[in-house]
Amino acid sequence: KAGVTQTPRYLIKTRGQQVTLSCSPISGHRSVSWYQQTPGQGLQFLFEYFSETQRNKGNFPGRFSGRQFSNSRSEMNVSTLELGDSALYLCASSLDVNQPQHFGDGTRLSIL
Amino acid sequence: ELKVEQNPLFLSMQEGKNYTIYCNYSTTSDRLYWYRQDPGKSLESLFVLLSNGAVKQEGRLMASLDTKARLSTLHITAAVHDLSATYFCAVADLETSGSRLTFGEGTQLTVNP
Image 1 (tube, rainbow over the protein chains, first blue to last red):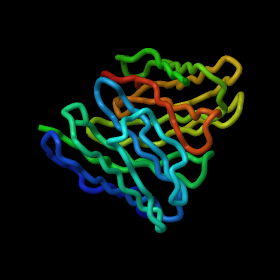
Image 2 (cartoon, rainbow over the protein chains, first blue to last red; image 1 turned 180 degrees about the horizontal axis):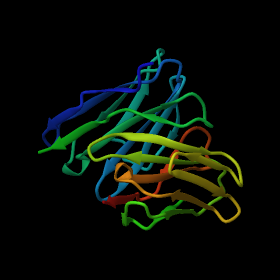
Image 3 (cartoon, one colour; image 1 turned 30 degrees about the horizontal axis):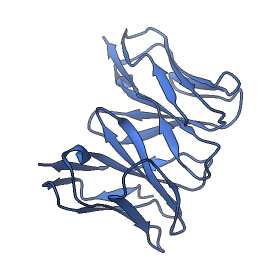
Image 4 (cartoon, rainbow over the protein chains, first blue to last red; image 1 turned 120 degrees about the vertical axis):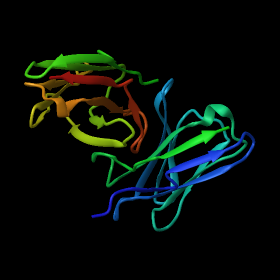
């Protein structure tokens, strides 16, 4: 059974640009969550999508947005990139709220 | 706002020794997860604890949950080098629906021969 797939694995951007990250969940999983991991702030929740609807949102500025498609694949977009957006972005999928979230390998975003 | 604290944040131990990692959280929850992360890798699910008194064991690791004390422990028995990694606990906030998790800072475990 294929795991959570995130693309791309690595990305280098400059300040002011925008970026789109992609996540394909495990087959059958309808919940997709996004997290940002940095050495200073640790793992922080960005948002969660379930059946194409945003179900939860973390404390991030509006520059961070996401969406989920009918096949449960999800994308995350960050506009007007800042140096502080450099991080590992992790996507996780789960079957339901009482099941563990399975994480992808992440996209490492570097802002120059 | 839900807060999750782990201690210790850094743990260096010898092979064969036992130790416990603690995870305290600030608001009511009955869903707690433990994850392992190796350097440069993603998070691997270790345990899911869903009720007060829940205890799960896998190999040399055992996790427990006390929802009244808002405390979970991850006990390591007879540590081996392969257990070296960073361990995170994560708690689901009952005030929000869905799968939103708040993570602890992580405990970086190093097992020395």
